[in-house]
Image 1 (spheres, rainbow, N blue to C red):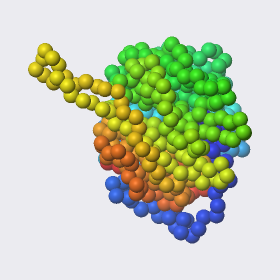
Image 2 (tube, rainbow, N blue to C red; image 1 turned 180 degrees about the vertical axis):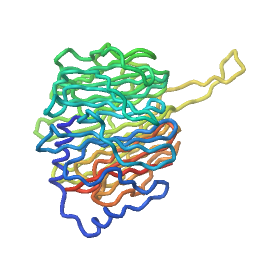
Image 3 (cartoon, one colour; image 1 turned 90 degrees about the vertical axis):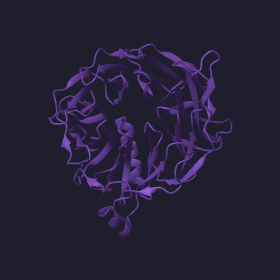
Length: 458
């Protein structure tokens, strides 16, 4: 998450916050456990400064991590990065400061080793000039950092993606350039590959792993008129850029998403523009990419009359996918959460000269009908995740509480009755399935003295 964007959303949330009722305050102090979810654990004490960039990760064995950043809006050079850990089948402990880091850009597990992609500024300067990777083993402290990027030039984003062949992909976007690099397991990262020309900053970025240990990156540059992509097979790092989509003149791409499926990739985005009469439009689109590069015709996910934002996509290893987005009213802060689901269509057919059945994978069906899941608070982003077996979770903030809707494997829609897993005054939820099938949620709670809570679904 880029720091400037996160701070903009933070200021919006504070501006839209009203005086809490006595019931909401009571709920914030006593958050009950919800069925299947553990009782929320407080991983950081209340603080007078702001908390941004909450993230979660889980290991194949069931260990979990919650990462977040604390920043004083009036003294950003004093920002700090923190991580709280839970052992397999254990509870979360208190968060610890990550040495030498002002911000955690991304968090992921490589086996049992936690990897943190961090950023920091020059002495007494705000983030971010240098990007590093810091590792922590299951029974050890933080290891020495490996510096990946120097002189990044300011606001920086990053992703860590564990690949199916045991390697780890890191993608860093900065005002100077967009880079990618890979590490073998929990080893050191190799040479940086520049995906944009030097001095060319990316705008929106999305990253995913592909079957067999490959990877792919998509991004926009400048005003977001074109979508670029790069991919690589197992053992290689994406490096060769190509243009995937060019949107009409006057249109801009935002909310870029990328997920993997057995037959290739799915790219999603929101496209906004003003028509000839000056009316504002924002619509969600998606397109499949055959193999790792040939794009099919984009198709709409949301209605053309809706004002759409905060698109999210998730997929499982079988090619099932879920899409979600917000529809907001231009004349009020009211927003509604919508979703669509699609499943891979695999049909068995007999080979002519063989007795064994041959499985033939046909093109994916398109997404099913739109389902409404109710209101989402202004300034909040939905969090969508899928397990390998097709289960899906969607988390969002509504009425200043964390709501989670679940979808069993093979279902055609998310549950219409979400569970509430937090007390009141909740904000900035993060949600994710781990490789072992457990899920972790984390969020901030409180407006002027926020702290961080976490809960697990096992």
